Image 1 (tube, one colour):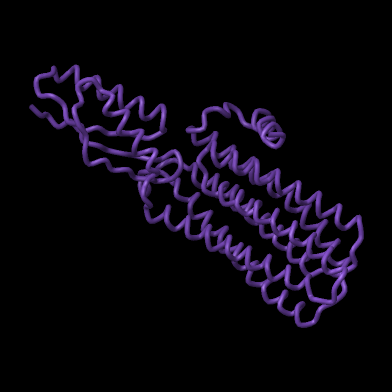
Image 2: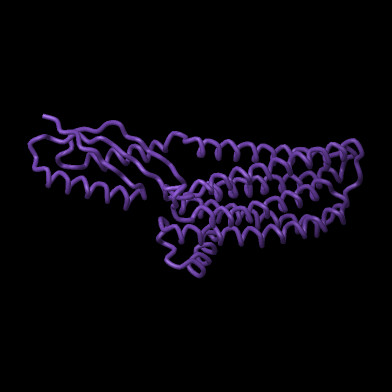
Length: 310
């Protein structure tokens, strides 16, 4: 709750007309804000963890530091994705450039996977050649603070991802949550490793690298599905059907088609069966009202085709 209060304050302070989330300029501002916050937090965490990891001789902490560095790259891509996806339609792209956001998510997944693969190799080396980790209270306290920072980053990315329906922010939220698990595991590993000669540090580094690679794979899978045209959210399908059937003279519907050209750039069409003895002007006005209601509530540009029936 506290994390939401802070991000809501920052949104109100730095984003003009923040409630107009279907406006491309407002969505861009949300993406830029989340990217800047991500860069600040991840640079801080990278420097702190790198210095700490070198000081206590922990490959797990150093691995976690470079994981945060890759997260900084994710934040930079978030900003570029927000900028590019907000570009207006042109001759070559009549539906706009909204899918740049999905491409940005895919690039983020490649970065995450590459970092995880590199750390996998380093962790294997640490397991084969284990070295003593210097555990102390200050080290544990610093890592606990980094966990709290990542919890807040998870919170604000999930919030923004939900508010503006952003796949990039949802991916960043998932990555931040993985970082929480990873750093918590490092803390536990350091404590356990202080009482045994078993290469706990190297094993924790290995676990973290696999977790990072899995996150990259899952993010890539979700991004590819969006680019290829995944099945729309069943709740959206149901709500569109409800709104269209709410029309007084509409007796049935069929052939609903939804096309996703990026967040805020979704179009849909549907055939509505209307009684054939109703005044054409009246039924046309009714359909116009339904299309406007779908746009207002769901942010979808709706086209309703009339099919007269007896």
